[in-house]
Every structure is written in C-alpha cells, then in structure tokens.
Image (cartoon, helix red, strand yellow):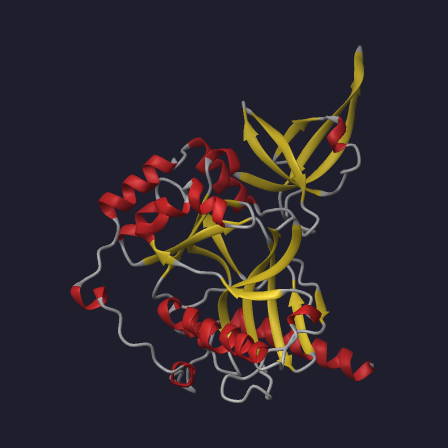
Length: 354
C-alpha cells in the first residue's frame, strides 16, 4: 500500500534473539486503528491512514510549549485511535507512540527512548494539558483526546500481560510491541520492531474472493479464496460460511485454528491485504510459536543487560535542546520524507482550491 509508517514484524523463535542484542522497550499492543497525524499549522491537522487516504481533523489544537497562543507547525506523529469504555461511554483517544518530525526538525533520527518519547510528552501532550488549565482549549469541543502511549523496560512484559493490567486499560489489548530503545524511526517494514501475540490472536489480513466450484457429479460449492498483496494466485482457502456472505472482495482478518483459516472480522480500515512476506512470517509464528512462557523466560534469562552507566538515566534535556541537537546535515529516511513532502504539497494544493 506504500504506507510510510513503521511496520513491526511478528516475533518468532529466531528474531526473539534481538532482545538479547540491544536494549528494548515494551508496550501493550492495542487493537486500534493506525493513523499518522500531520500538524501543518493551526486549523490544518490531518490524519493519514493505512491506505494513504488523507482527511482533515477539525477542532484540534496543538499549542507551543513556550507560547501557548502559538500553534505547532510541520510536525508528524505516529499513533493509533482507540475507543475506550469509560462509565458506559465510548471515548475516542489518539495514542501517540512515536514522532518523526517536530517543527521541521527530523527528530525521527534520534533515539526512541528517552528522546522521542520525551518529545511527545513535553512538546505535544503537556502543552495541551496546560492550555486546558488556562482555558485556551475546551476539550469538550474536541473530537478526541491525545495521549502518550507509554513504553516500559522489557522486564515489565509480564505485568503488561497480567489480568490486572488488562482491567486497568479501557480498551482491549491483544499482545505486546517491542521497540528498540536507541534506534531511529524506520519507514515501512522494520525487522527490528517486534509484535508478539498469543497464538489465539495471531492473524493475517487477506483479500477474500468467493468462488463457486462445480463439476461433473459435484454439487455447486462456495469456497473462500484468500489472497495476499501482489499475488494473482490464492495464498490459501477457507470454508464458506454465512458470515462471509457480504464480504466478497473485502479485506478480512483470519486466524489459523484446527488446521484451517477461521474468519475473525472485516478490516474496514484497510483496502489492501498483508504482503506475502507478512503472511509467511505469521504462519511461521503459528507453526513455531513463541508462547507466553517462552517469551517471559527468554526475557528473564537472556535479555540485553544494561551497564552501570545506563542504570541511572541522565537528566532529561529541555525539549528545545533535544530537537535542536539534530544536525542540519542529518537527512531522515528518504522514503518517509518524500511521502511527507508529497502529502504536504497535496494538502496545500487542496487548500488553494478552497
């Protein structure tokens, strides 16, 4: 689909070894809808979805930390929208978990933890909270709230998988995300960012094509053919059920259970199926699963160990110093910057037509 956002890969018995080679942070995997958020300037905030569809987000403000009456410009966030259940109400929240560009600075070149996470907190989330306190933002008029998605040391993985943590969340978790602490942001598929799901949640997004098979002496039988991206031949097939009746040529999420693919839900947020590489990686993780017990044991016995210098984190720098430390000669990932430029030009063109 050409979506510029970072795409994690499924954890398996081979790539789990990355957790022993360098520092990682861990967070829960939310079952949300992925959006990159482009903040061009005041009244020009946009979402970019997995299909590279761009749409405007109205009535959402991002004040500048140093001057709350100023608005952030040329800032690109990565995150996901979740619907939290609070006192019986559906509350939409955008969980920002990474930042690629801040006020024209390529912060995506800097390390994830603590720099990029601190940038989101200090430059995006906290100024909004302060503006609310001062009456400059009325959250009741905003379409959704914006929060930082927290990441912890990987020793907290067991806690994130506990029933207690699951009850604390207002939405359903479906696994874990392991993010390299010191790496820069990577556009597209990234073999260093790992997603772990329990076997019951491992799934592939296919394009479904319903066909009717018939032949001499055979009854007409409907079958679901499952396609992956860029391939003309079906990757697999599934038994037709009434649940598939209206899903011909739709993107559906399936899990592999009892030696067959089982329909889980329609992916209305996607227009393209997973790639063959992604589908094969998921199949590999199903055939050779990293169970919860194996994962937690590996973290306990083989995780990368911090040295003494890393045990005590340095004092947090001022965010202006953080983003200002990017050299003018640093050029962030060509793919995502090209995508950002094209989107910006497209949006400016649309604005001129208004």
